[in-house]
Image 1 (tube, rainbow, N blue to C red):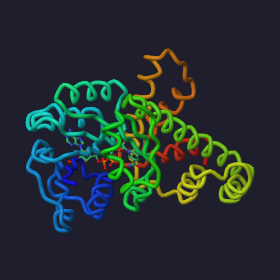
Image 2 (image 1 turned 180 degrees about the horizontal axis):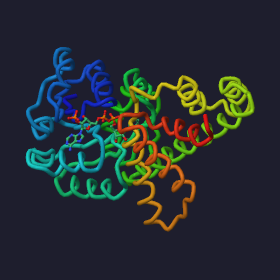
Image 3 (image 1 turned 45 degrees about the vertical axis):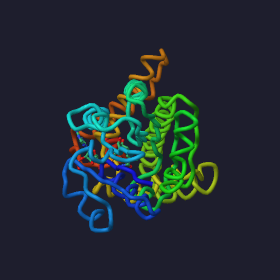
Length: 290
Ligand code: NAP
């Protein structure tokens, strides 16, 4: 299939490469053009604008935030300035509100919108091991399903309303942040009492906490190397702000959200914007005198 791909950052590069490997004809565009060089060398075609990348049946976007997705969709030379009829598959973690706006805009343009945010860090993106949460009309979902299968290990179809996929993704990221916070606090408690963090993690993951999230983030916390980041703390804070926006709209109190949001803010202030979001552990441990 002829597809466009916009956004070749930590996640997008691996996803686009897997679409290329699956035999698709891939048109790529990135704001910083040099990030497309290796994909072009490997067989992708460089597009000069997002609109040029949208001269295809389907266009994927994997961009930082709402602002970026809106810019490449609605802006000059944006996706919606191309010929009508394209299906836009959005993998970014964006707001429920923007997903609703994109759904309407693509419908008005004679095309379709599928929200397909992902779980998994850059290594999972490179290995086609992402978990994808997809929302969209049945026809559009059926058309893009082989593309989603090429980039992930499992796709969950949430329903016809694309923004519900974003709500699921935001709920998941709130849970991940809460797990990192609780793991870091438990490790501080153990360590202050003379128990090694690795010993605690071995017991936790070997008993009741054997889920991938405890293994992945427990390992990162024990390694203590929070740079280079797989997922930078400012994007994590962006997500917690999107959760707060959705909670406000729905009237759901989320006191734990306020705590982890403040923790991320403090981490960025103390450590800088290049730290991984799991780097909140450094602040937890510093507060405990470690
Ligand atoms: P990243 O490495 O920072 O890449 C961000 C991409 O967005 C780059 O291609 C960047 O272009 C582009 N961009 C930013 N602002 C733009 C603008 N105004 N106009 C056009 N392009 C713009 O981020 P990432 O880690 O790949 O994350 C991408 C998305 O996936 C985010 O929504 C994130 O929340 C989500 N996500 C990330 C992870 C993870 O572990 N990293 C996991 C799941 C979901 P330049 O190259 O020019 O800067």
